Length: 295
Length: 295
Picture 1: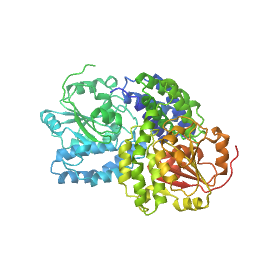
Picture 2: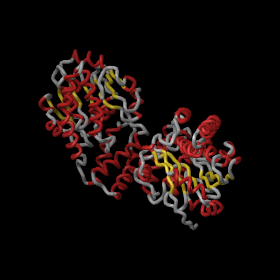
Picture 3: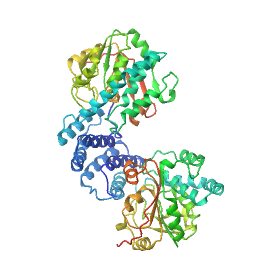
């Protein structure tokens, strides 16, 4: 998707939050704002928001001198998610439809996103999540859920390419991957950006035990195909089924004709408008097309 | 209050909304964003947000060529509020404490603010408001309500200077003014800015029948004392009690040592933080000091 003008106020908010998280004082925070003011008029709106994100977070890192300001937050969210992993598995055992519940859990894991909301109380979110009664009829009005189509594609697939999103959330991805009946390749970012998953997170959270883990080669908070490695592109083009987690992957892949299922929480009005759902909705959205792309 | 860095993303959002409301196309909207990018680095954060607002909305009007883009919205919100005026009066008749309920109504009227949220469904807000059970114990956790102090000051006052805020809301101000036992001077802005009240709104909504209506002389979405008329400053300095409606008046007068009661809905996290309440709270906040200011 292109960047919308509505994304611009949000860029300023995100830059400010990232600067604060990197320990910037008032003066440095103002420098970040002013620098962004200099960048925005040159932005090509044909670029996707995560492409802008590379430029914006790169600038914040340059000004604050921190290369990976979200490192501690990432470690903390992985730790907290791992702590509730046994409880999640127990929930799954009690569920009438394990795959359905695992898909819901994978989407719920997407609430852990410091890129959109840095003061999110993970623990409270997880507790609310654990208290939530998972069943097929709950919250029907507040979600898009192409579950039947998802199952159809999965039943015909010989493997799944699974595009990860955030740390913490990655543990919820593991839950879903453990329910998938076919081999999975789990894809992480090419380097640290916001709280997005890298190889380190995959190892800490044991994804390497349940999937083959590779990097997309792309260091953006999304999957910009032009910036991905040849290895990833080959796997992407050949995949029977792609599970894409998070809004950043949706923003970079929504126009691509591949059998992609987007699992995320719609965190802004622009994306919610594109999907045709309310803001905050749980989304399982299938594309279902099967055209090859060329790099 | 000063402008916070957190206000800056909001300035971009407001400028974009104002441009759209003025009928600007995509290209003009982008011009507004780019122009604001050029202005922000020069902003003195010691200025209050409404002082910035004068510059920002002035720029939007210049680019879009519309001097009063909110004119129709103002007319509509006045009309809708006037239509429910008889119902509000009936509610008041059924209330165990007329003054208390009238104060609550005046604060609730502050939800009608296109400066913060242009897609607010006024009718729904008003219906929710009419359905709401007004009593002294409801929503205690979500509000600051210096009602006793308000009554004490009112009982000793020989007149009240009442600073208006938005169109539509002005009808709710009339409800409160009709319950006040002393003469009232109702103050409107010095010219059209966003959906703020001007002399025209006061006449249309019959405020001239229940109060003496004057202009502050200031064309900002707040009351910047340095920009106000001599007549207003004299009345402001001499007033026994000042009722100040809306966040814009709070933002420009929060540091002034006068017996001001601020009535508004806390619409942003910065102001909610200053008051010590949750965002969205109903606020009746008294200063209670009685120092003279000098212009």
